[in-house]
Length: 188
Image (cartoon, rainbow, N blue to C red; front, side, top):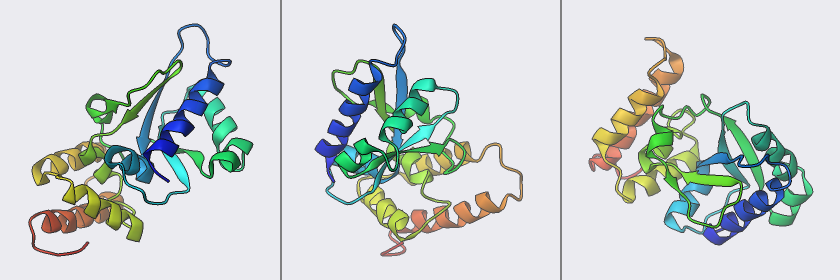
């Protein structure tokens, strides 16, 4: 999958939602996950889904998932599906909306956005599976800044309890990523 396939997928969602949107209604759609990485850097790496931040409460967002989610005809047609990821699950920094950039296009209903690379990196720290580490290496090699990454991390966990196990785990993984950025390790 490449950038063009993701763009066609988003355009198809936009076209379908025209019939379901009220006059002037828009859907801000924030890409995260590997599809965001593919889109930002024009990479040609595999993914089975297009992850978006699920903000709860949008009928259009739910309609998009109903039409393009896992197991739908559209998912079969495109070879990947739309996945709603709860905002607090990765977690994502609280400032992600302000730091995201619009994806250019002739959009009718969608307003697709790509996150700042530092915010995207933070979403991969808690799970830290092999593909997450691979994605983090790509992000690091594309120019992540350790200080900005640390600030994004703190923003993502600002509501966490002092001894939150998810924050502790993600913090250890953040230290590994910063070590990689500083040249102390060659791999994550």
